Length: 500
Image 1: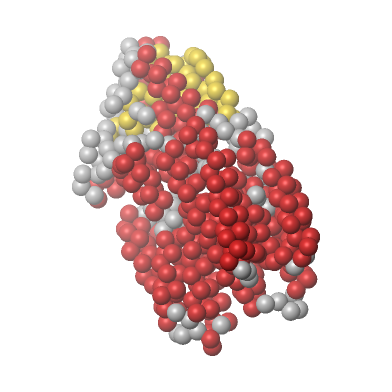
Image 2: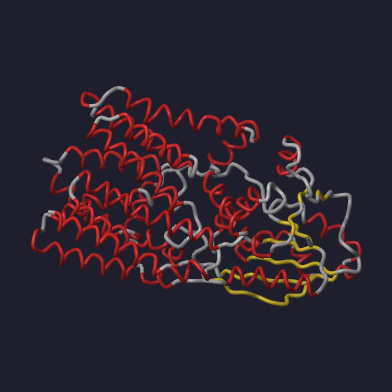
């Protein structure tokens, strides 16, 4: 038994080391490619610099991930590898946690197969090297689920307390944690005769109390109608689309878990019932929101557990079947493993260098936040922007910030202005075509997005070529249109940047 345990732990360690080795180059070289990666980096920079750099936290996502980034920015400087490092570490911890969870609910052998199934899904292969918050969220979520089930098995308060604390951390990372409050409640009620009543306080009430101050703070700075307008537009019936996401990005896990469900539906073990209940509740809640494939990620490791049990029941064929599914999954995710892009960083660096070379005082950026991060100029605060409003409520927040006003044109009449534009935001170009026509296109960068975004059949931009265009505008030829260019910077889709 001891020899078998050592062998299983060796397999787990081998998988984790393989994940680290495969993702070492992306960790060091890859750019931030995603819109939200740029948002997180800018907000982390803002927190680390106490408001003198980056962009302010805006409550669109909870603050924990940005705070982690800020802490590492404070130590290492504003290096983007920090975001990839956090995801890599969180993903490795998630592999350990899913192994522990599967071992707790079934066996260590099932745990190893679960790790193999989960680690080879395209979703894992993507998030392990991304700078998004999903890997960190999954880590906290799996820790919460692990301790919740340990609490149910051992009926110990300390386990339910840990479950609640990790659930609070998950909620402070992504708003999509809240369906799991419902899942814990339902599963606890189903097993209430075998556990003490304190589970309810530690696992559900406590994390709600811990999250309540953030909600109160958000309501102080953001009007309720703005919150409603932001999220109500994303509501719909999208359950089928999320099922399609699982079929595209985790087909092996989905197939095996459905096969396990059909095979054992009449005589299923209690713990598997609870797993499926948790998945079902999260899936039903998820389906009412906008179809982002990223939101389906927490379902995958949970479904991998019954899928691994099905393979484990194959006895002498389980090794062969596991290898087949590993090879098949890696085949589906090969392009994601190979993908690496430095175009966003190259674009931002080029814009910054050309602005310095031409002595351009202002840059107008109609690009995703990740490009803005790499340009590394100061970001101006337009009068009337929420940033200015929050700065008035918190003394010192806008310390050192340049507040620009519509009636105070700062563009030098005889200077030059750089305009960088992303074709993904061409609606802005259509609205201001006269200004764009005044500029000279000096360079174009072609960005190829991560393969998962092209496989996402519901992505409205999957068939759009993504170009970053850099224009130089000679202010002297604008004459009376110089004021129009200045006012262009007060469009909420435009970021005005200036020399530090």
